[in-house]
Image (cartoon, rainbow, N blue to C red):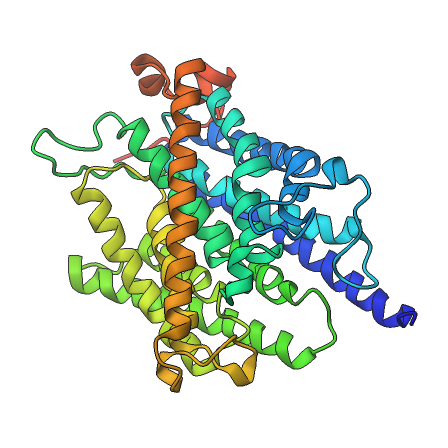
Length: 418
C-alpha cells in the first residue's frame, strides 16, 4: 500500500525542521563554552565546536550510521557503510532526512566533551577524539537502544537520548577531564578549589537559551513524524516545564548552599532539566516533568560540588549536567513513566513496581561501562600518539595564541577611570 504523499511530506518536513533546530544547538554549545572560559581560550573552544561537528558528520556518514542502523543485530549493525544500499526506517521519509536527524545527535554527544577539557587539551588530540566517538563509540550505544539492539529488545526506554547522547557525552567528558588533570591554579595543594571565572556570562546565557530552543527539536523531533500532534505537544510542554523548574532549583540550591543566587547554577539547572526530561519526555505527564526538572537542578549543584571535592576540573560542568542528570533522566522513566502514554510499563510511582526501573538501571550500567572503558582506551591511545595536554607555557599564554595564532578579542581594551 502506497503511503499518502502529503502525510509523508509533513513527516519529512518535521524531521528536517527538527534536525535544523538540533544543529543550531551547536551554536548554543559554542556560546556557552566560550562564555565560561577565559578570553585567551575562547577561540580554541569555538574552533573545537566547529570541527567536532564536521568530524561527526563525516564519521557518522562513513561508519556510524551503518553501526547504528545498518542491521538489527544484538550488538552492532554491519551494513550500510557510506550510506550505501540503506533505506529509511521511517516509512515514506527519505533516508537522507533520517540520517541528518541522527547525525546532529551524534554531533551533540561529541561536543559535550569540549567544555570539560577546555583550556588544556591539544587541538589535534581533540580532533582525533571527535572522529572516533562519532564514528564508532556513540553508534554502538545508539544501536543497542534505538537500532534494534539488545537493550531495545528488553524494553529499555530512552526516547530522545538522556543515555544515548547525554550520558555518553557526559561520561566521555568525565574520563577526558580526569586523564587531563586540572588546569593550572584550579586547586590548591590542600585540595581546596579556586574559582577560574569565565569571561562572559552574557555569552553563556545566550548559549543556554539557544540550547533550550534547539531542545524542542531534540525531544519533539524524536517522534519522527507529525502523525500524533498530541504527543508532540506533550513533549514540547514537558520540555518547557522541566528546564524552568531545573533553573529555579539550581538557583535556589546554590542560594541556600553558598548564600548567593548564582547565574551559572541557574543556567546549568535549566540544562539539567532539559537533560533529565530527554529520556521520559513522551511518556510522563506535565506534573512529573516538574519533579524531574527539580531533582535535576538540585543534582547538578551537588554534582559540581562533588567534582571539586575529588579534584576533577570540569570548567562548564559537563559531567554533572549531562552525565549525572542523564542518569537521573533515564531512571525517571522507571519511576514516572506511564504505560497509557506509551511507556513500556508503568513506573514505580504509577503502580508498576521495580520492573521498568530495573531494566533502565541495567541499560544504564551497560552503556556507561562500555563508554567509560572505550573512551579511556581512546584517550590513552591519543595520549601515546600525539599527547593529550598542551605544555605549561601554552596553557599560561592561552591556546588561542599558541595553537591558532589569533586572539578572540584582538585590539579590544577596557579603560577605567577613578
